[in-house]
Structures are given as C-alpha cells and as structure tokens.
Amino acid sequence: MARIAVTGGSGKLGRAVVKDLLDHGNDVVNLDLAPGPPSAASYTRVDLSDFGQAVSVLTAVDDRYDKIDAVVHLAAIPAPGLLPNAATFHNNITVTYNVFAAARTAGIKTVVWASSETVLGLPFETTPPPYLPADEEYPARPNSSYSLAKHLEEQMAAQFCRWDPTLTMVGLRFSNVMEPGDYQDFPSYDADPHHRSWNAWGYIDARDGAQAVRLSLAYGKPGVEIFVIANADTVMARPSTALAAEVFPDLPLKKDLTEHETLLSIDKARRLLGYEPAFSWRS
Image 1 (cartoon, rainbow, N blue to C red):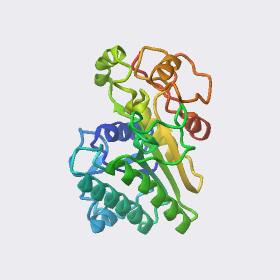
Image 2: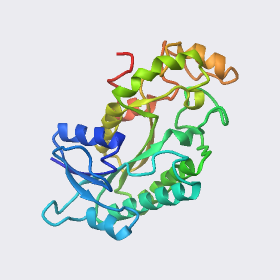
Image 3: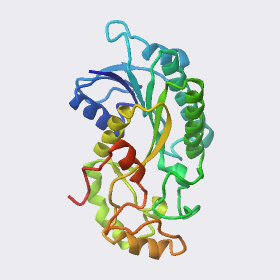
C-alpha cells in the first residue's frame, strides 16, 4: 500500500482521484485549503503558496503520517478568468514550484500533476491547432496567463528531472472535467457546433481522469512525460469528421476517425499508460 498525497483533493477532479486511489488500496492524504466530502482519506489543511508548509506536509504530520511515497498535484486556480491574470499566474506557478521543490526535499521520486488542454492553444477559434486530432507533438501555444503558467510548469518539471535523473514526473493535460450531473446539458450543444469548438468538443469524465492519474503513478520511467487526457468521444452527437469539416475546414486530419472519436488525441496515453476511458455521457 502506497501513501499518496493529493493536493487539491477536495476539488472536482480531486474528489474522484482520492476515491479511485482509495478504492485501489492506497493510503491517501488530502492536502487542501478546504476539506472534501467524508472519506477514508486523511485531511490536512495547508496553504501551498507557503513553501514551509509545502515541505512540512510532504515530509510528516505528527500522528497522521511520517512518509509520503508519491504526490498528485491538482491544487490550482482551475481556469482563466476566475481571478485577475497576474493573480492566477502567480498563485499557480508558485504553488507548483513549491510542491515540486518540497517533493524533492522530501525525497519523493514520483510526481503526477495537472497540466491543461489549454496548452494546446485554446481557444481553438483564436489559435487553431496545426492538425486534428490535436496532440502533444506540436509546440505549446498558451493564450492566457493560466495557460502560460501550465506551459512553464511543464518546462519546470523537465528541469527538476534533469537535476535528479531518478525522478519521474508526469504532466496530464486534462480536458474540461465533467461529472455525471453535467451531462444533462450535452444534448443542447448539438444545435451549434461552434459553441463547444473552443476545445474541439473535448471533455474528461472525472472518473476517467482519476484512472489516468493512477496509471501515471504506476508509469515508473524516470524523466518527464506529458499526456493529453480526454474521453474517447466528443460532447457532440454529430460525427467527428463532419464537425471538423464544418468548423475547421482547413485543418488536415492525421487519421481516419471513428464516428464520435475525440479530436484531442489520447493515443499516446493509450500506448504508454494503458489508458482507456470507461465512462461516456452517451451511456
């Protein structure tokens, strides 16, 4: 049984990650400013913008625990526009640096963290990708202070792994996180394909996001690796090929698409992590 610290474990994705890790036999510590729903995970309130607190909670907390085996870092202002630009950037980049550096100080060798689909160039109406499905192979195109911080977090992780070649760091570019209660709105999107084209009609069920986190913790190869994490389908009832042709007619398709196949490529995650989404709004 591993002891895994989840920063931001009280959030939308964090709750699913905590539950999934517990269900698979792990000891989970939720590190957040606010408590989550009752669970078998222990909870410690922490302000991760304070480096001393970050080091402390990743080292030991009195009678709670004396060692952390791995860190899942989800704590962040979760989207652009929720705070002024500089406040979003300063909070997210500082908190991520503190978690990465504190994990190194504590001797933790496995870190999985939430990057973002926004690094791909969202909104795509402003900066279309060079092709579809969008993947990890083309250079980052941050278009907001939030996305810029996420891009720099990926660069920071590469340097941490250069400093310590035994470190494994996995960044997950999560698509728009959804819970089952959100799916009631999906049929309305089909009236206007432009309404959700900002992220190529992608989404991630929080439970599948949690699966991706668990598989990333088991990845085990030293160095930094980045994955797009989306569901296998889109939020639309219309076929994916028709959507791409209507909204992004000038973009080449890198592959033949199945009927509702995601236009945020999860091929790399499938190949290297064994990731396979298990949930869909269609069911």
